[in-house]
Length: 323
Ligand code: NDP
Image (tube, rainbow, N blue to C red; front, side):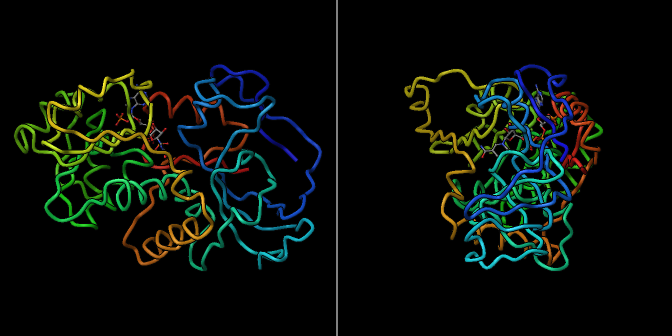
């Protein structure tokens, strides 16, 4: 097999293509030929060392492919050789084949290709839990979504709009405005022309936002707090611009705000929740209610370039590696 491996943390250059012996699936595991692997911002945190991983490490927490072998007992899952499956949260996806626990995969429905399946597992289920469970957004709510043209942001925009909210996206350049608007944002703030708080206040006034779904982190945190209404919620779910510094709880008392820092893996920890969330998402994609934008595809060997582009704010939608 071929895989991208890191033996030390650092910049994109530590991502190297290597040959490895083919893995054997253990008890309850599947061997899957990877058709497409998702590139996610979390991969850059694991590569850089912001999030600790045991080395050597094969990055990639998301993929779709075809089952080519079952480990002992894995047939009890009902999954068979030849089935099309997808997963997220299991490392090792930047590879031609991967070993995955059978209870962490979902079956990909007919009509959804491997690229789209790989593209919606991590970012799609994130958008799903944020809008349905962390802060269940709905009619009458105003929500703000920084990085609204990005992989996760674009999906949050669609799901929030579908649930009836007024959606204000923010993007880092004029070129991304149409991407966020095309996803359904009612308004898009171009951060190359104005600040986030100023841009949103010009649209809805002061202290008018019910929820901010923020994956940008440090750069937007203060503006997020400023925009929220009394008893609003700041959902800070990522660190694309760096991690948010420590905040004293007393800061929140000025408007009785709620602050949460959720992570996907706690919203799909049980198999029932994983399957229900994936089914809901696949149904929405299959029905054309959620549109997945695959912004770019790279060969496995170009993983470093994919990371450079993602960290350089050069991408829109989803980035895939195609082994
Ligand atoms: P994106 O496709 O959204 O790419 C990141 C975007 O962040 C960029 O395109 C850019 O958009 C924006 N950005 C703003 N400032 C910076 C900066 N200084 N450096 C880099 N990017 C910046 O990535 P993902 O969809 O993969 O992830 C988005 C965020 O969501 C990440 O922080 C990620 O960790 C988080 N996440 C968290 C999860 C969770 O459960 N907690 C699960 C999934 C993702 P623009 O130029 O328009 O500002």
